[in-house]
Image (tube, rainbow, N blue to C red; front, side, top):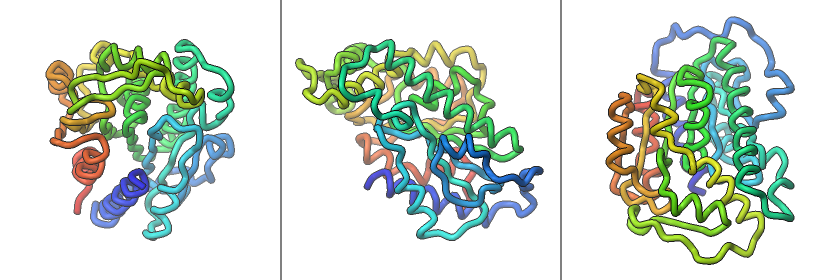
Length: 287
């Protein structure tokens, strides 16, 4: 329900900019149906030749590609100017990789790399057609978006909205996840990790996927970029799922000209409370 609400709000304000912004925005020069090889990697709704493409890096991680949010957008709103896309990840393309037996951390890293390559392929496909491409990453999707930037560069997309992620996750959290042990942050600050691994192998493997990205030090990986002003970064000061950004993480983002929005809220509340402001500031939405 949270994801559905988010995407509905996002759609409304995205549609507003399309109707209220300048009318001389150009459509892609080549008018073509989306290639089948790209269609196989995404779920989408809207005009296949729309000038603006909103690409979501799915949260979770989950073993199913989410379709409900994108469907809801076009059940409620009628627009021919926007293409909304949700992109497959390794475990949604092949859910069996997380079933049956425990994966290793190295396997998790490899699967995440596949997910980033898939996202890159989809983003590049639309960007190469001359379209405006926005990337949204929330929670697990925030880490996927950060990894995309670290590996492929900041100019892959036009702008990014990253919500409730982390740059340098606490070691105790990602290490616990790598062993299939759930963890969270009390009051958004104090990390607490279960002593025993979970009983469900698929959930343990999902935790390992999370660990495979959370183990990275993005203040180092993104330090090669002088300017990251294409990013709007939103975090919650009492985020129980990923923890609040540390002073060091905030200072790093400030040094790279990132637009930072902080709210005194937990994981889900931050998403719900700040998604509209985030879309306005990240993508220049005009009400």
